[in-house]
Image (spheres, rainbow, N blue to C red):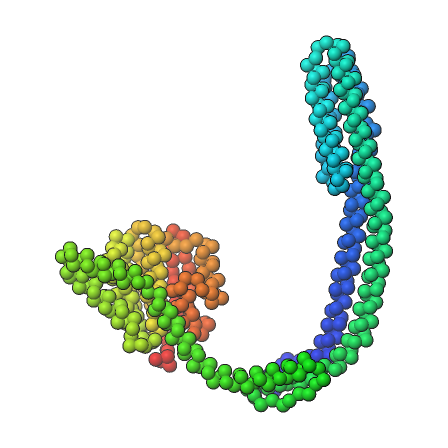
Length: 475
């Protein structure tokens, strides 16, 4: 304990509280920044309105005079204007659309909509003049349609400028009032906060550091295995509650430590029971149906072999209640399972088991390999819908044993493989067989052991289980 304390420099609660006081100044800076953003918002609106008024003023000065003159020349057949000034109207429409994107007042938006409608009508009237050959009729249309529409458009622009200018004036007044209010609130907030921190922060720090320091000593005693703690007196209710909670915690930890080993052993058994519970009843039904079919078709030898394999499968599953069996027994269990399935899936399934004889006496948790072979069959071989092979191998790697189940089935998409790897890394439940085997191996041997998986879509999947070679203490 003394060596551990010397490595880590202790930090008093008083210093921590002073740091908290300083850190509380950062929200003040954030509040001021928020106020600046608030003011920036008003400035942005002001700039937009100024831009809108400037563009619309230019629009008002140039548009009517230009269109009226060009249409007059076009109507009388002057060489100065041989085509309709449609481009001028289109430019006006684009300008109105541009203004509408930065206009948010209801009256101004409605005015821009009217301008767009008048411009659209103006284009139609221009084409009517183009399609009219009679000179007098063209002059009448020019007077009654073109000049009227340009006058209406100019009037609406004047209305738009009036509305925007009015809003600009109200915005200036509102912005000035808000600026004064923000500055006043900021000053009051900053001054009040600083005075509060200076006056109460230091007093609170002194009144809390001593009892909290004593609580920390008690916690260190609990961490060192000492569960008889001195009482701590304090005028604060919270500290008294902490002291009472730590006292109760120290007593409960002592009891929890005593029952931890029993709970861990119970968890081992529960994991095995859950893994055994995954046996799909359809496997038994299908196997029995297959045996009946073999007998009815006169294939008595094959039926006897299948019954023998089924007997071996369930005898190994029970194992007289033992959770730890030899690797040879686990291989026999897996072999009987694959033999049964090969009868049903003989057109798509091949398998091989290559475990060195010297490893068959090593003891491993029951149901370490068979669930992986089952996963390979149902998620790899069957999905491929063609002849595939499951290979089971074992080898010594240093002081560990590496058991590998490989199939050349359909494999996994990268996103699914990544999800399974993450689930195994964080002990999450994804695919009961893989998760159960992985968690049980880690429970027995530690976090450095368990399952690793690699797969490539269209080529197959490889699952490896790493266990220590010497596990006599588990038997």
